[in-house]
Amino acid sequence: MAERENRRGRGRREEETPEFADRLVAINRVSKTVKGGKRFGFAALVVVGDQKGRVGFGKGKAKEVPEAIRKATEQAKRQMVRVPLKEGRTLHHDIDGRHGAGKVVMRTAPEGTGIIAGGPMRAVFEMLGVKDVVSKSIGSQNPYNMIRATINGLTKEASPRSVAQRRGKKVADILPKREEAPAAEAAEA
Image (tube, rainbow, N blue to C red; front, side):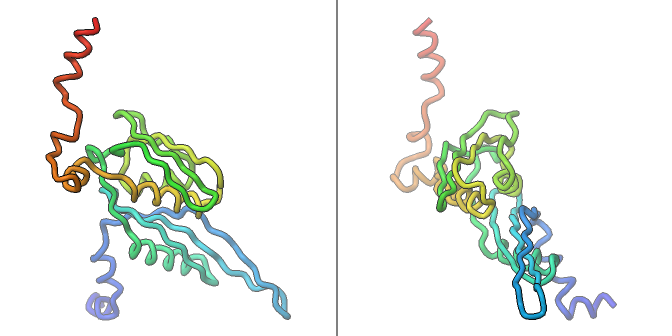
């Protein structure tokens, strides 16, 4: 029986992508009025990530909820983006993201802060693998626009390694020197 499932492709798909986690952000019931009454459909918004620096979102529409969620999850897996994380837990620098009327502000945070974010933004950070971040949504509260604005901001993030490579320098030349900070504090005291 296991062979039959693999031939159809059901068992294989589960083995290919077990590392992705997904989060259902919003589900919306829409109706179309026709001659015989109303026809209902569902729209789902899903965020998918590997919790190690990759995240994507997708939306799916269908007559039934599970089918809409499946379509959204498939689209999210196809649209994943990689985001560099500092120490695997927070952002490298503060970022603003924008999409339509949705605007979000994301700030790097010290260890132990946790995810300070609302609704759809929290889902993106959890699926991305961020553990410490402070964020605020300004403008549109529409979950679609908030997620798009968050992803827009995250794609703008640059790691010190990528900046150094672009400028043709070493990472140590770009980052502030650690020895100078304690010396400066001692001189002030």
